[in-house]
Image (cartoon, rainbow, N blue to C red):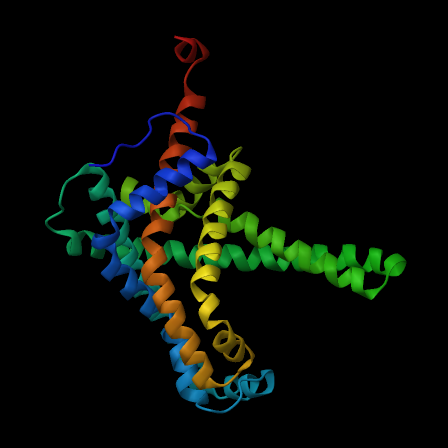
Length: 291
């Protein structure tokens, strides 16, 4: 059984507790994390299979997209990835929750199946929200870039557009990051799960972002140290742009997903409960808090 804090904690405490939870549940989640990583790589594997040893260039991709069957197959594959990954992610969250509670779920496959449709609908809504946000950011960035471009030049205009896009994407992702937990752990519907995630992050955006930034920095540090002996091969692989090189990169991503997913989900789990504790504390009357 894993003890969760019942009161709001600082980012470092949340991060360290999440890492400990990931370590405690690693053996239970490793196989599912590997499956989840493989599922997420299916579009890249399909593209690598189509391209073979041919260079992957914008012109080559455009020619393939003009083929109706390729575009349709790719969209169907993305939908399949969303469905399968939603099912596996429900299993991962549920097993992580059972690790915290110190219990074992008997009918976890049936439970994950019941959650899959809701997770898929919420995932589609998340994607639509992200597209709308990017569209709005593109408009605002273009307007601001045009104004600054007349004074500072074309380079400044491009930077403004890119900054607007990056900030918007980060803001939306952090706000909607916990909708899967709301569905699996709290039984929320697609729309209410997205709203619940936003409500939890509201007034706690920088707190949540700092925990995520620490997680990303830790993973990047581990990867850099682990890959130092293979830096020459990685440099050659990074400059390659063929289907074969894409397949090799996909294998590396699969290994990374299998190793780091338990820790990332562990941090998100602890952060989710911390945000719930913060919201519950703010909703208490002043007298109750003082008491």
